[in-house]
Amino acid sequence: MKRVHQAAGTLLHPLGDLIPFGRMPEEKHAAVAAAVVDVLHGTDDFAARFDRYVGVLAEAGKEPDKLNTWPLSTVLNALVQPAEHVFVKPSFYEKEAAILGIDLAYERLPGSGIYSRMQS
Image (cartoon, rainbow, N blue to C red; front, top):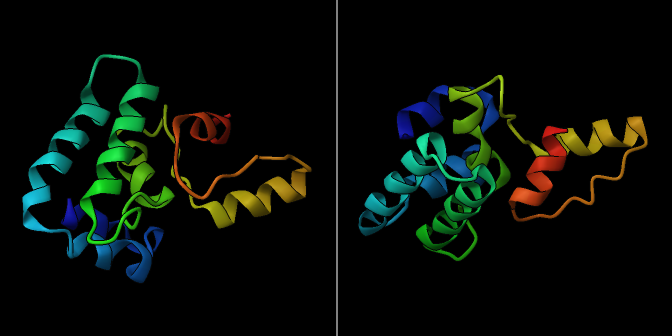
């Protein structure tokens, strides 16, 4: 996952995404890996899988809610299934919504409800 995140180049922010992810305690690696497999390849409702993944990321960082950023929560789905999923970088979406006059009802922490609106 670290190599994929690093290969994503400028999509992920070094200080806000990559460094905190790299500092994840080793005892959290298995839970995050299982959550990644579930969100990417699970068979139940995507919204539930996404929310579980975001929850695991929230618990995995050294600081609560440090890893459940929009970019980290959405980059893998967008890379693996680009026809179905989008990469969410809030600053870009906020600018686009302002230009189009759309109220995203943006929330700082990722969740399936707002993700669905971002996809639309």
